[in-house]
Image 1 (cartoon, rainbow, N blue to C red):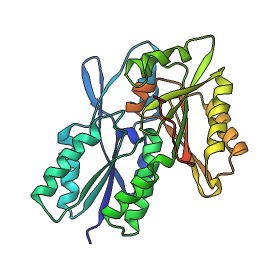
Image 2: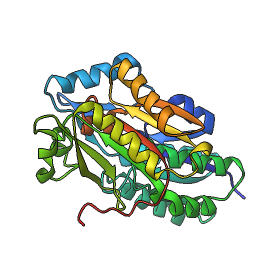
Image 3: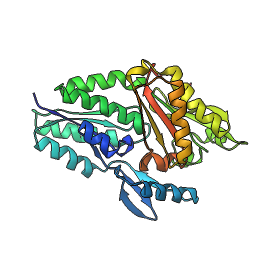
Length: 297
């Protein structure tokens, strides 16, 4: 049986340390600012994080692209030539067309070589929700599971990823087309803060509003505490968009107080998700009860 390489993309927000630990690689999307296109690297420094969000704080928009076909060809081709099958876990199709681009290439590659397997999974998630699925897949790959078995397992758990996000405003998400324009009022009325989830179809849905920043931070942790399953066996993932250090520590303290989890991982919301969600966002993730909410319901 061929070994399996787990690949994700820039939307996964996995740090280089996590990717090295779990033997995960990723395909790069791009950011576009002032007509300059740059690869969306997840190995960016704290200064580079601050620079990107500073551009947005100044009122400028940073655009993004999906994974280019040639990037998929390079990364997939590299591992296939080394004898690997591939499981690619991509950003939710509702948020990026990358997984469709990858699936077209996968079909072509398997037609050319009947011995290989290339699976392309719509994670129905983004940021560390997508990254969590890549980590679970990588654990199975390390155990010697087949690409088919890994694909089946990830499909079976992808709706159990819980994501709760709060932002200062929905303006960035609205401009990027990530939420409906009718939802934009949530973030613009007298300190009201939206709570956003990844719904059952992988769409970013503003489903609740909370008065004030501090209350919104407490609310995302409370919602995660309500939905998480077997927290003592889990890592709770916390991601932020260049937030104040003291505020990050405050959210970590809330998690410790409300969720008896095994550990807390803290990282940045990466350049692709960050360009859409805007600065000063917080997001928490864990596995829990299956997500059934749909934005259109």
